Length: 167
Image 1 (tube, rainbow, N blue to C red):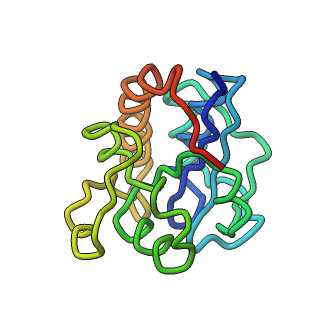
Image 2 (cartoon, rainbow, N blue to C red; image 1 turned 60 degrees about the horizontal axis):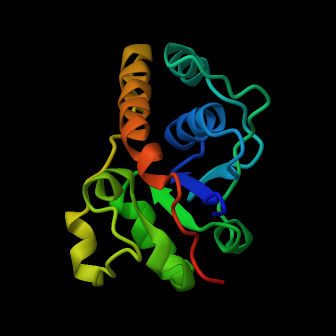
């Protein structure tokens, strides 16, 4: 069975999606995994707070530069894992073809059936989220990284043997 092609989405492709990508790369090096941001400024390096958060979960994202989400990123993914409801809404509005395989990390942990149950637009406000540490101190970033690491330790075994979406 093929490995799932994962795409992690956050706002700036600066912290949450970077941490998740780095963890999956370490834990499942054979899996194709990428990250992008809905409002990223392309080419920015990781902040010192993000670097500290990455180190706190024993991963690195050396050379990471932020990327803005585009249609090609989504077409190359089997599963799009966002961190906020706004990310899911953004994808549904701009890239509706990716709606069926896009959800938040906490929802995927709660409901990992495939295909993902289709949500009506008015149900998106009920999606659970992972808080953005932006504006917080280093401790907030580290707490975020540890939460993502914990969630992925639960999720990745569930995705082992997972069947990618049909093209």
